[in-house]
Image: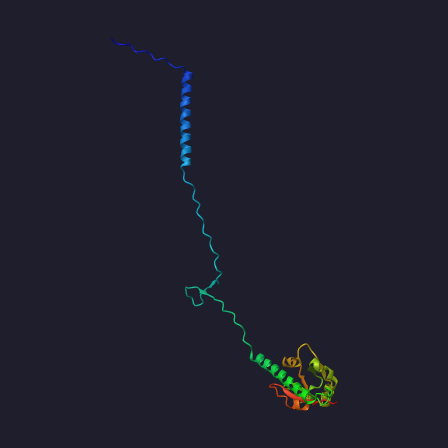
Length: 218
């Protein structure tokens, strides 16, 4: 015997809408859950260090080739070298040393010769002059260098120069030594020593200069 179908009860329209919204909400929640899980599984971002570039050396700019060649020509600065001493400077240093030694020797000889008499007694002024001075008289009206240690004898030295034919000369002291001023060309002559007649006679000749001796009056 065939059983007749039983009719299913129909849900109200409002209940159907609620059921559809719940299904949509479940699907949205499920999608958000999967999205959060995917974010957690994403690997950490790797930071790559950028290498620090060293400053480049400053090199001379290449110059255009002068002969038309294609390769650039780099101008390399030449190394700085010390300037060698000139022959004139070397000669001046030798002269200064020779005069200094000769003056010291003359003074020692003088001290041994006349140790107990006044300093100006029997003394001779040793005068060096430039080559153009042929005689003491050529020094008339000129400046003559003298060191401070001989300044106390200026009057007697001046009188001896005047007696040799050079009038109106001026004996002048300076910061540099007398022989240095003569060597530098500042003066035409210089008093380089006061010595006994024997020591003055033994005073050596200096290359490039003329030597004169002038006896001082007591």
